[in-house]
Length: 249
View 1 (spheres, helix red, strand yellow):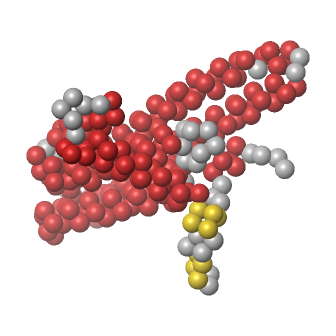
View 2 (view 1 turned 90 degrees about the vertical axis):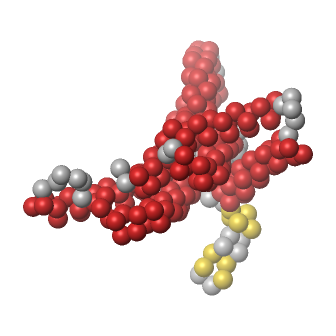
């Protein structure tokens, strides 16, 4: 059987469960989502047990650094009104960061490389942000569909464009994360397979295989950076959208 670079994204049923044609199977994707959630929860619990330590351990320092980073992000992007949403944003960032980094472990699975996961998360946040907008402004929230100073004759066109643009936020937020994670892992798989093929052939190609091996290591380091960056981009966009909903920018 010929393996493909996309084989690493295959969904495998680990515990088949279904009622008629409705399937609730426990898959490898669900396993790694639970793993990401569990590791983050365990880490936060262990470093905050008994209120933490006056002289922080290495892990406590990491958690405190992430906490302060997200806190400053919320303060800068949303302001004082964003403090009540800090737990949601902090949890979202930690979850995505954990899921992305776990996917970098060899022979593991990257749950965020599936659009059903990323779009499900982005759509849920989109609905929540919209509800926040209505809570703060009521029906006046619809005023964002028509920019200030726009000619009334263009109102029908502008309303449609603004509505499509607003709804597309849910799609772009999820697709951006999914596409970057999937593309990065696919590229690493292709080049590593190429290096293994050259090494297997032997001769001068085995010596030349050093080049793609070095590239694989470089791309792996770059992919770790991308994993962290995508968690940051997703989080800061959620902050921006929350700011728009609260302040009607």
